[in-house]
Image (cartoon, rainbow, N blue to C red):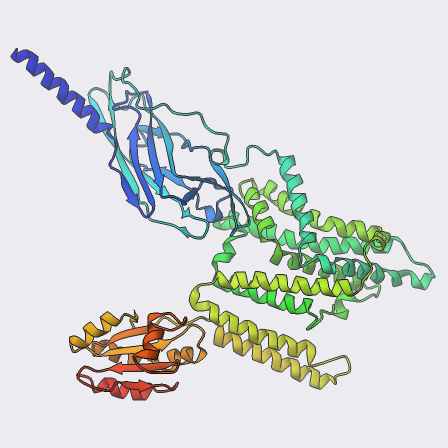
Length: 600
């Protein structure tokens, strides 16, 4: 009887040991993602194969980017086993679940995502000479990286790593697996390229993408004008011989196409430099993470909208559009082509991002070919139309409809500009809006205050003043607010009452997002280090009372409790003092400093 009990105890201990080695890890949760690890076998024999699974569960509405080809900035889900034990364990490429296609409005393209509950498999093999006799425990840390997103926001949590222990022991080949390893999906997440597309299909798609750039609102209205200018520009070359060469318009059209291709050659060159020298890829959407770039693009779209409204015109300099036989006409045509390619980009972020996403996963030679194919697609209509200008006769004749159409395009550009400004951090939006207004005024000065009959000196003075005003406005509005020196707290009536009950003074700054004077107060008073230091030294509770909307608690208190008509106003509440100190002006820094010094 005792021997039977002893056998049962030994068997139980052995089973417990196996389970502890291959156990399922405890579930962890980081941000909106829960995950845990599990092993296929409790133990693996030398020379055998097994797998580790990472189970994920995301909150509703959240997803991981699944593919490095479509994920912005390379923020797709990645699993990286630690280097520890690599001489014993050899890991294969992870097996991801089949992804779903989702249209990402921010990127303007379809992306592959995984969400809800899913599992990632990490197959591995054990070296045949892993152990001699006995058993060995290998600790494996699996790093997890990736961004989790919804339709409106993205986060990049620090998932860290999850640890599991692999037990290697002889004679365990008969153990039952806890799960089966699925077959690899023919998905870009496994191959690093779009397996469903051949190179020829990709080139065709790149050509179509370039072709579609010509129907972008920024380019289409000026397409007939550009082509006719090129045709007319080519006529005088053979006037000395009393005839007009049909080949010159074709040559001029090819020069224009060369300018278009030059723009895409610059992009391809930048891609090569980044990958060869810096190990990075040229992601078309990465620049939108820079507030400076987004600001520049928004201002460019405002200027283009003013051009559509007829506030100013763009005249090609005679040095570029010369018709002499020196060849400057060809340089002018190429320059116009380069400009046309640039003008296409503000309205074509989604198209270019999709094409670049595929190209970045390819070898440099193929990536360069794809990028240049986009340029060929854009240049093709210009080459055809300049070779056969009679085709232009089939287009509607210029008239009132063209002006109305250009104005409508201008409003479309303003919509895109507003969308870009809305994507900026909150503290920068107001400054960019003010700068856009001043910039519009300066553009109006440049184009509307002068004419062909304006004397040269007066014309240059007016335009110099416009430039100086725009630059000055840039220095004032574009840098964005400086970091606050005061630890402002949100308006809370209970917190104010509690501080006064504890004999703690309270400083309330009533402000609003639409209040320009409030920004002046912030810069002239509360960005002073001496005042910020006094607020901290005296233990003053600093309250930022936002009155942007009518129903905000601070707005109601400003009107009903403090009986103030509007902002800006700053109030210092001192315990035991019946009437608070109030400042309604803009430059009251010295008065506030004096009042703070008197505090105990």
